Amino acid sequence: MHQVISPKILYFGTPVVLISTRNTDGSSNLAPMSSVWWLDQSCMLGMGTRSQTVENLQRERQCVLNLPSATMVAAVDRLALTTGRNPVPDYKAEKGFRYEPQKFATAKLTAIASDLVQPPRVAECPIQLEAIVEQFHPFGQPDDCAVAIEVRIIRVHVDEHILNAEKRYHIDADKWKPLIMSFCEFYGLGEQLHPSRLAQVF
Image (cartoon, rainbow, N blue to C red; front, top):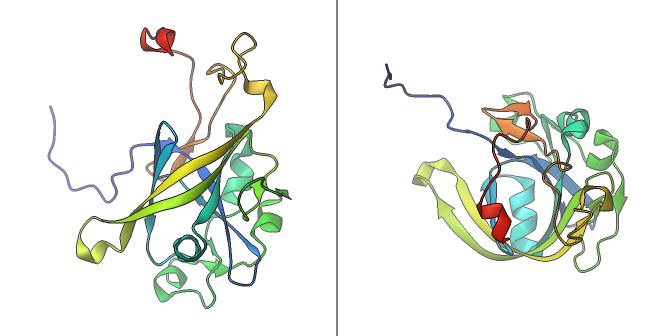
């Protein structure tokens, strides 16, 4: 029996991304997000327009999408309820957010230089995607304060330990264990359920 409900959130589950951007003073901002999907070299990010990250993306038009593994959940959670915006916006202050200018130190993560963009990569993340902004798309209802940001991946860094030994340019799905957020809770992947015929042609 199905029930008709009005859920507080519709957030069924996507990979967690630590997105690094550059602030106006040249320092780095690092923010967890998980409304993200990819198609070929393009990626769509769903974010609130009032965040420091979106402000940085609008100005700099560059970022790094760092994908943490499930083992990095504690580092990601250390960034919860922090913001790079000072003063803290009222709507965030009411939820307990605090201003934190040293995001990498707070998460106990290491910033390393990128090749093609200014924001740094997160050394501990097995996958680091350097990207440039292509377009901003208003998203949702007018009062939602949301935007879909289209970025193009221009360089991909992958830890060699998660590459397929036989196909060096393929990530081994059995070795890559991404951190997933579903309904604002953290999860990892389980075992493969069934071989995929589609995977055989790529």
